[in-house]
Amino acid sequence: MSDLVVIGEEYHIGMWSALGAEIFPVSTEEETKAALSSAIKSQAKIILISERLYKICEVEIMKMRKQSLPAILVLPLPGEEDSIGSVGIRQAMRTAVGVDIL
Image (cartoon, rainbow, N blue to C red; front, side, top):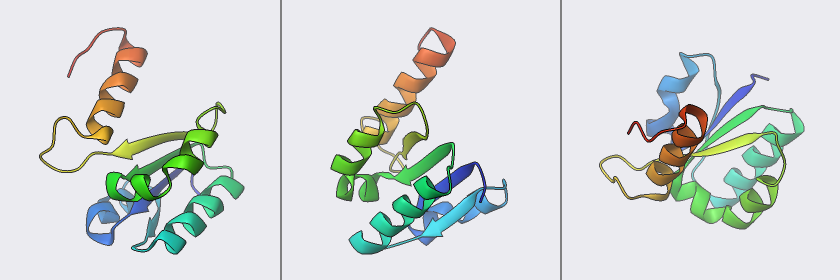
């Protein structure tokens, strides 16, 4: 499995496979939890998950965020600047660069 895993709705994540990511197109809570579990068992280093599906698995993801790997980032909803995903990416960039560039 790839070091980069993307979990989300098929219409949002298809492009990631062209970048070498392993994609898990899901639509239900059960599929999402199974994909997340599979990504963790495969020792993926980065997991991207769509914001809608993040809300379904928020408790499980918050427990995993206490570990250094995998890094779990939320893909923001298109057109929403104050969404969970947008805020998370802004914080990650600020941590990595040391300044808010977005």
